[in-house]
Amino acid sequence: MAENEAIAIVELHGLPTAIAFADTAVKAANVKLIGYELSKGEGLVSVKIKGNVGAIKAAVNAGSVTAALVGGVYGKIIIPRPSESLERMIRNKETVGYDESGCDVSDDSLIVDSNQEVTIREEVIICVVDNQNNDNEKIEIKVTCNLCHKPECKRKKGEPRSVCIEFSK
Image (tube, rainbow, N blue to C red; front, side, top):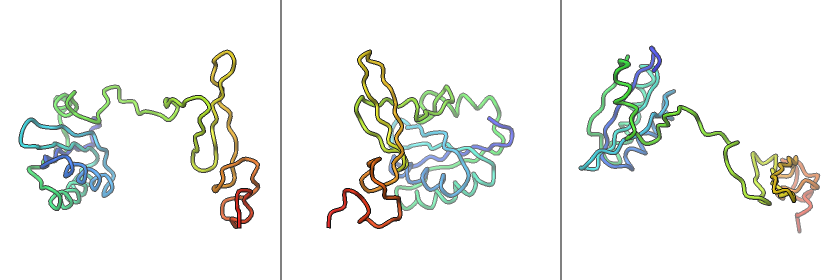
């Protein structure tokens, strides 16, 4: 953990409350969600977030208001400069959402079936074509029409629908 980072652990009644808290907290301030941990019995869920002290305080306050409306807050703690020895308690195998490798999953690691079209950002279609050698080859095609998504259509986003080759009156 970085020296200037604080952590917060908030215990909530039920998973829906924890999800509502985490959503509000992450949107309210510049904090990162470490994950959540289900406790045994009573349906309590601990949500763990990290960030700078001011952001953590704002996130916990905003999230607590939302959580109080859904199911309730059981307890909360903000640790401004956590000791390195707490690392194993905070990031353990019980924490759901925490990846021990510290690597984010990238879009490149997603597997696409052959002959399947995938639209990305309404501008590019990636087609995967099977060759005779069973090697997958990716072909990138620029698409300008956001209605039919066909490369041969000359319509650009924002132009009238009647320009689209698939438009019928």
